[in-house]
Length: 244
Image 1: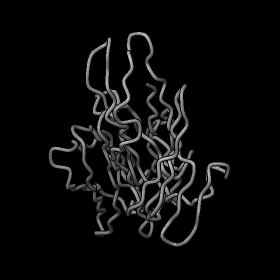
Image 2: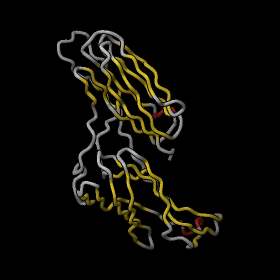
Image 3: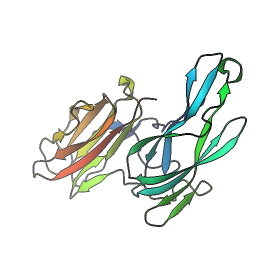
Image 4: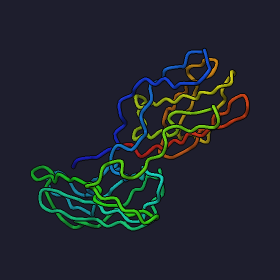
């Protein structure tokens, strides 16, 4: 079985320009959030089984996926392959932007094999998607054929980058960072709806900018609201999928 994850790209240092500000901009490692693959990202694809290493029976396939676009998907065709067969799973529903879905399919249910001698090598991919605006994406199209959300939220001269953090693990080494920066001197306050989902803390400050760390704790989604001294607000969205 081969797992396909939504891979978090390597952290890089970012300096955001802010006009007419002498105070140096803080550098912060961030993860790019633009779409670098299919509009629907498969986080996990696995066989559901019962048995032991000698004899195991399949009850189907489970796929966990996330809509990484700003559009609502209505139809997703998954291509499923192993060494013995190729199949297409047709999933019809309402798949909203930024939402992680876990669906179970009966394909291959009842098949028996021996993991010890003949473990299947399951591979899953997205072959096509139909969106609610009538547009269609096919796997032979360029990765960016469906528009991605802007990685920056801006309200006047006040901004947050990135404006969305996606986690596929709650391991401490997967903590992510974001920067809030404005053109008005003073502290930047944050409030959030994360509760037990994630911990948000400030780690560095300058006259015009603040850097925050987000530590994931459990599966779920929440929002972080940043506010400057003039009461302008910008919002960052956090999504934590089930650990892979």
